Amino acid sequence: MLGLFSLSTIPNNNAIKLVNSQSLVSTSATATKPTSFTRNLRVKMSSDTLPPPPEKGIVVGCGGASVDFLAAVATYPKPDDKIRTTSLKVQGGGNAGNALTCAARLGLKPRLISKVADDTQGRGILDELVADGVDTSFFVVSEQGNSPFTYVIVDNQTKTRTCIHTAGNPPMVSDDLSRENLLSALDGARIAYFDGRLPETALLIAQEAVHKSIPILIDAERKREGLDDLLKLADYLVCSAKFPKAWTEAQSLPSALVSILLRLPNINFVIVTLGEDGCIMLERSVNESSGTEEIDVDVLLESLKQQQKDESTSKTCISSSVTRLRAKGIGTLCGRLFLGTAEKILPSELIDTTGAGDAFIGAVIYAICADMPPEQMLPFAAHVAAANCRALGARTGLPYRTDPCLASFFYNKVPK
Image (cartoon, rainbow, N blue to C red):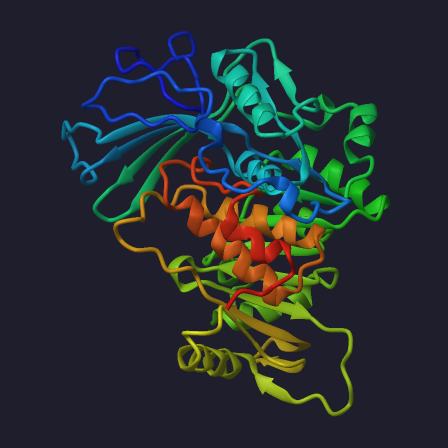
């Protein structure tokens, strides 16, 4: 997301000046000009001491890229209230823009396909992505219209955020992306990622990715137009807590995960993020034997939760063995169930959860490219998401590859 703007200006396309993404200002103080080393404040370790990032690190993403106007307030306003912000930030946003910024900071080479207008906000969106290492050469820039933006109210008391989104205009359609650019974007890609937006264009890219045997990861935040067509082509799925039951109409979350893998036979794994409760992952297994135990999936999840409590001081990921998972009224599936913990954040450190899910997905994309096993991937993604919650906005707290707290993951060690 994109830095600050003068507090004396009105937020419209002609008045806002977007600046460095690491800047933060209190409304009770005078804004100071960002220094040249602001972007590198979090970099504490030389990249020379780390193993190189994955050799096949090109990621193609298609989805939302926008501007977020973030206003932190002491408490959420009541109707007709007039209140002051405690801090303010203007920063790039959008699920795809955030996730691929995360992937870039971790060492991958993302290419993002999206659409903005040729206005002040659109140029700022592109500039910030480029500064973070995201290839924007496949963006469509409309001469007219407006770039997408979101007002975000961050409640300092409840640590929640409320988003009011305005879509970009004109919207992106499949004809906006030429065949030449489509093939160029997918050239050499290790994985393709879609956040469920821009459905016409996303489906066109996904179909070509399948043709080129490029695996696909889908972010399923909620049911959207065209999402079902994308899901049929997906290899990996990361979804919000509400999506599995809403999409399958299953009675329980574990049963819904079984239903998803039964309905979508191409999916290798599905992860559902649960905020402070961590995440649940169901991985399909193709190594079923005649002696594989069968167990009710809800019972198995409760067993893993109990095991997690018993080993809470030493384990960040608990998993079952390969098991035949039975979901009542749905069917059975052979696989492994994983329960990942969320990293504990002190109340004094928790600033803003905006973009936490996008950070998690960016880390999962990296983990897939780096061939991390689930036992390593889930704690890694939880750690990256937690880091993002310690600063205002969806990108300010995203860690860089050189952050020493990430070193153990890059050296193929599974932190306890």
